[in-house]
Amino acid sequence: MNNTSNNNTLASICIPFTVAQILKKLGVPQKCLFYYEDNTSWSDAKEPTLRMWYDKNSQMLVGNSVYAAFTLQELGELLPAFIMRNGNKYHLYTHKYSYDENIQYFIYYAIENETNNSCAVEDHYSELLARASMLIWLIENGYVKCGESYITTRSTTSSTTHVTTDG
Image 1 (cartoon, rainbow, N blue to C red):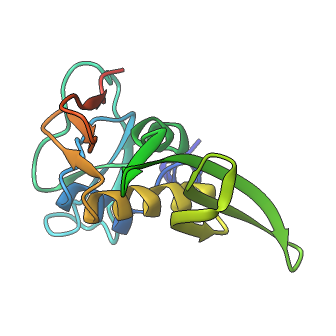
Image 2: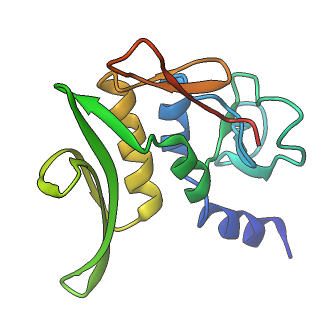
Image 3: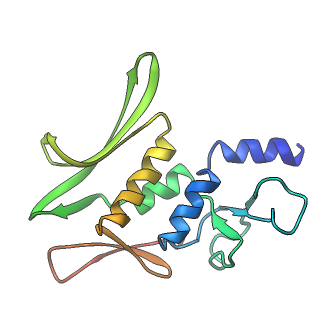
């Protein structure tokens, strides 16, 4: 398999480079199975190179030109199962549906058994992008805090929930 077809296969299971840049800027820990190396400024490459990180548990990806290329499963592990809002517990829901003969993914947080009472709704043709957009929304709105090697969800109690990025 040549490098171009390998990158195309990886690109179908990883977030796009532009999304990887946003997540890194927001402080999401850079530990995952695949990564982008932005070698466009110092090589003949026309776009960042998508590579596999061979030892996920060895260390986090570092450097200004390296960006975590999260997969669907990795993003799912980073999303909290619920968030607290105005004293209510909102649970994570994911739906796949057909709209105008196209498949779409609807990801949102809602009060249990009250799915029409929701917040943080993301809707995309790609479940991967819907999850990434949801994580971005959660961080930007203060429901998730990023640390060096973990993500913390905001809680109404003194304890917090840590979702580590360790394999």
